Length: 213
Image (cartoon, rainbow, N blue to C red):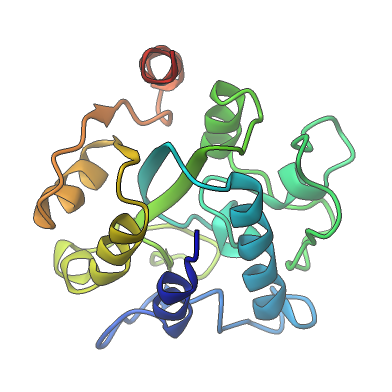
């Protein structure tokens, strides 16, 4: 499976004016990001896609979060899951993946931990992505998250649309209603899983288990 056309769109960043949005595949902040951080995130994503192979299932979330894909480059995945020494490292991670932030403890995203736990840590066959695949941050600055405006998502659904065209035949599931609405905008009627945040972890696990059975 060749996703290079999708990656070119992704790396280019959002269309039009997108204030308060970081394209982590091209941008870095000296006080938050380590050397060659954007390049490291591109390489992390590409190595992850190799682990996935041809997806049978695609889970689409909302946007990258600062504890997760903003620094790992991978949706629903944090630096500590790639490289952490505390038992949170995923079985397919380690080298050649690398951390890109200046956080010595490495970032850990709670929702991402729940998603990977529900997947049993397995990457093969399940692709994690976002309807808005960059990091929108809030009023507290780059180490915060915000829900991307509907107009911003709608203007940038070309990346998701191209991804789904390249992975035709895979079952698409929305993680939360926001992602379900974004998919509907491009004509994809995807079932919605309960988002694992804010008390939804157990329902998310149950729903995903049924789809993977």
